[in-house]
Image (cartoon, rainbow, N blue to C red; front, side):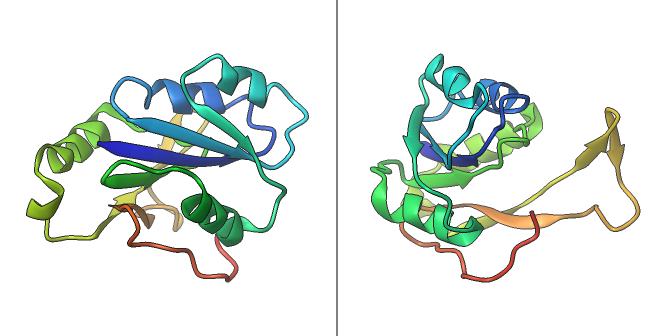
Length: 151
């Protein structure tokens, strides 16, 4: 099983695509919003995801608040940004890890490689690829450092 954390603010243009790619194979999806004034909540509420409001406290603090206060139950946690979409290939890789018992996987966490797009074309040069980020981890094993992050 896997739970998902997404932080948002005014992500109506993106959140639907993000959630659509997660809905059928994840246990719970928590969307922690810091005061959207667009249709973000309406879109989230039209899905099985759980919408939670928490005033903005910074990227690391916002994610840590969620990890420490929300009822994550699954053995694994995936953190994804609202403007990111899990591809079928990434889903297959994650599901291969999930198919093993959590105790059978020696790694506590996995880095995921993000691929950025501009005008529907992947950006593979100019320093944006590869872009490895620790995003998948066993529940209770990760926290974010309180420092500036690339967002």
